[in-house]
Image (cartoon, rainbow, N blue to C red; front, top):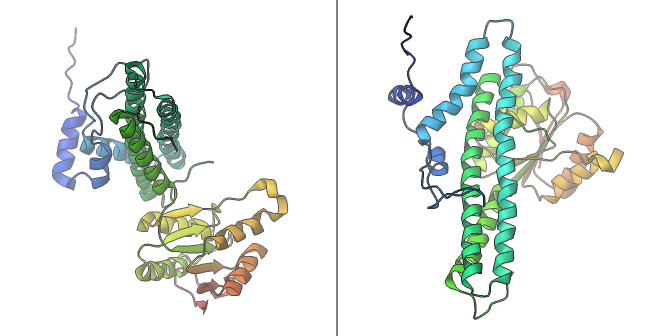
Length: 332
């Protein structure tokens, strides 16, 4: 009988080799894969675990290799055109799991809130409260780790395809309260603050909208680069179309690390949906605007911008030059 000897390196060995060539683990992975709680437990039916988090460098490299290796093995083959679609699905799987964990953590937080409300200082309720808080914090920790992997996979997808990845679509004070109940209240407050920060990026708003047909990428990206140089903490809000001007702006935001708020249409509003979205963009009180010629919706937004006196950059289809920055018409 022929003996088979294993010659493939283990992943930790591969990660060590890559570390020698490419440098250190990113700060985000270091933070996301740091233990935040002793006695990790993600459900009432699970036993408490004291196991550590995975090595952040190995996870970072594994996540990147999932995407990059796929493109490498399919490149120059008849399945090359499938690579992007498969890679999109890989990123989406991370996104879906992160969303599931987020929902489970929200339910666990409600359980903590209910136990705080009913807390009477008894040993039984205190034990239930501590268990519920442990589960909630464990789910938050897991969610942050998976979301970090998703974001890194999305970055790798963007590097390979040139396109950014996008998804489909108070208590009463009582003398009976113990220190553990107060700590739980503080925990819930901190959790709310963290979640609000991630869903409501802070910074001056720059709004952007344009048509679905546009050739001059440089014209848009050069303008956005100049705005970001003047307003480094800017947040970009777009009308969220998946091609043309908005897609160029979304790609720029992903590359530059600029927070992006995508305003999709509310289809329930029918023909008024696009105009309502323009009003939502203006309600953000933008400090600057970029509007590229497209349909009547862009003309409507341009009128709103002028009426409010928002410093703006208006681009016409006739002014663009493929492969070079076109002439800009600005109105302040």
